[in-house]
Image (cartoon, rainbow, N blue to C red; front, top):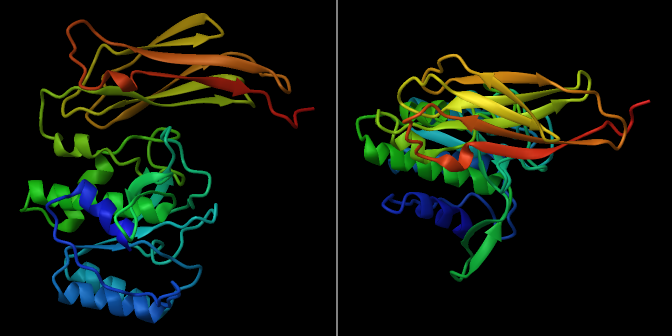
Length: 311
């Protein structure tokens, strides 16, 4: 609880924090206790309710508490679970809940993070720096760390734009998130990975930020795909991607990208034999005069590998 509260406070230092105990001293809990905590938080006026726990089963009483919170205007943020499963834990699996998966330091889906239909967002969740019970610095891993990062981001957006409802603020975070995996929403990253800076600057037409958000190799076809996202408040044109495959370069030009939109370019290469690797580096080529707000996301590198089980 201390680690979770410290993460919320680190993202939204001006937010008021309300602690509602839903576990016994040994950490055990049940759906009824969590439901009681949700009702207590709503009664106290909470606008964002963070639930950094979950289970494989649910009950009507917990579902009714979630529905009550959402109907009362609160956003409910919940951890997706750490079972490496293709299904979300409860209560993250409930419709309307802002379900949060975890990413690692490289921005990839954390190996332990649950995924599945209904996942809304991902956020850092691997050795995230926070505070322990005595105020000592600790590293905290799990989707239970990712959820309060998103809850704090929600509080920050609401502070910036007090006329928004929590549900509207949650949609802003999701629609201004870094695309992960293939272009668009998917079961591993949801609608993307939290990018609070972009969400807060969403209406600033001077902030231009094209980015390479993903790079992958298809072992079945031998093609390399690169996903480019426009993290700006205005449309961008004149972008191109230079893809280097073991030093051999190929350029692909992009059509105009609307704000928040992603596009995929594909470069054919070869089907790799078992154990064979291919060095892939992709770089954005920007039109002259474009002042990029974040040049660190303009390139991506890695090794494509042959399938170990390939005949």
